[in-house]
Amino acid sequence: MNRILNVVGAGVFLLSASTAQACEILHGWTEMDRARDVPTRILLDLDHDAVTVGQPFDVRLVICSPDTEAVDRVDVDAIMPLHRHGMNYRPAVRLTAPGAYTVEGLFFHMPGTWQIVVRAYRGGGSQKFTLDVEAQ
Amino acid sequence: MRRWLAIIALFAAMLPAGSPPGSTAEILLTESEIAKALSHGPWPLPGARDMSNRASGDPSAIMLGRQLFFDAALSLSGQISCASCHRPLDGFTERKPRAMGFELQDRNTLALLNLRHQRWFGWGGQNDNLWAQSIAPLLKPDEMGFREDRLVSILASAEFVEPYTAIFGPLSTHSVTESLVNAGKLLAAYLETLETGRSRFDLFRDALAEGDLVEAATYPQAAQRGFKLFVGRGRCSLCHSGPLFSNGEFHDAGRPYFVEPGRVDPGRHGGIEALRRSPFTLDGQYSDDNERSEAWAVRTVVQQHANFGSFRVPGLRNVAQTAPYIHDGSLPTLHDVVDHYSNIDLERLHADGEAILVPLRLTEAEAADLVAFLESLSGAPVGGIPGPN
Image (cartoon, rainbow over all chains, first blue to last red; front, side, top):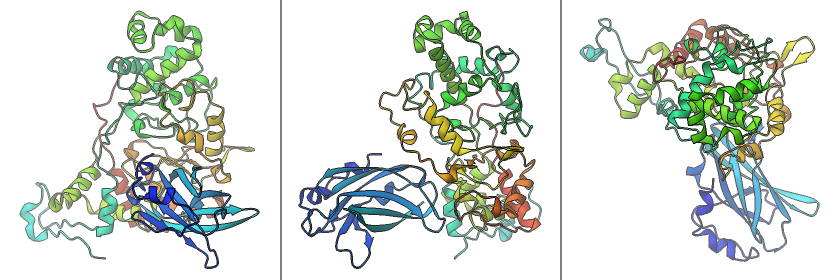
């Protein structure tokens, strides 16, 4: 379950850098989709080889925003949009550094297209970020 | 999509002995379907020790567990053993729709094969480990029940006492609950050894993996057509995935929920409730795994409305030997199962809009093909059919 957490490498740069800076997308990281009017970006460190149906896996994510307090907290979930169902397990989200989180225990129980959904909260509002992932 | 063709008709001499003259062997699968076939193997899977059970893999524990499995003395009446319902000659299940302990049970007896690879146990997944599931029938007064004095006298018998002490320590230092859990761990050590052998499908799958198209083409065409339906229009492989032909999770199969008028079987919903009350989980004090390495599932499983009326997706290896089918044993044959999915009543689903099952409207020939594929998943039990000794 900690395979991805071991993939530090390039991520260290991101984690140690101030999230107020514009994040560079380094090897292995992917920018999540967001609405056009959302200034905040979220980068995800996803090892696609670790995404196996029926096995839990972890990811790291980094909030990139000119505003250092752009996000109070994040929730992470995943759904299969075509099947209209979600996961059977709730992943644990941990803040590891300002603007950086680990997400442990994502679990895709069917093959096909899943969508990781991140909701970033600030005050009473939230912003939605998505990333499609193919599970085999 | 390009088809992989291995039309052997021109090479009749390459056909196995016994093939009718002029017969045609052909691989009917597309590349994408071949990739899906490969995902259902290889078989058998490597077996790892269960870290939550110190008796796992221990030869003396396996022997003691086998004795307990066939021993009716553990039950309250002294007349029901595990093997009374999980009959080795019937694929470790029985031919009845619903199990009969002291009283008629609500569910069909699950087959006890390939259990070591499962995450959840029972139709509702009320246990997250095999030793807890093994003592579940003993803990139910209407199923087997058990007498503390009998349990202790069996474990203290000359046959058990030495190996038991070597594995768990002196029996005299154990509470009744600890002794019961240890009996469950002995049973689990035995049950881990019950596995299905390689099936006709596995030979086909491995031949494809090795690029041996001649061998692969000997897999019956009806079974190939059935497999195409299984992974294609039938969408069966969405849930019946991987080498076990099960994703190990729970789904609503569109069968009635009522056990009797006014009483429903809550399925996975009830399973999670029971799991949360259980002291015997991988996160509990009776697990031998100090790291609690597999406890993530019980800690993070989500109780959802859609769990109500969902039941475990059974593995399909040796499915032809485990009739009747579905959680309540209400479908007598594989043909009935296929017919159910072919004409499924979506109104019965309790799945909160989940859009997986649709009526397949299979023709008779297609239904027969799907059954031919399912029948090709049988393999003789590893080590033969075991008896009490």
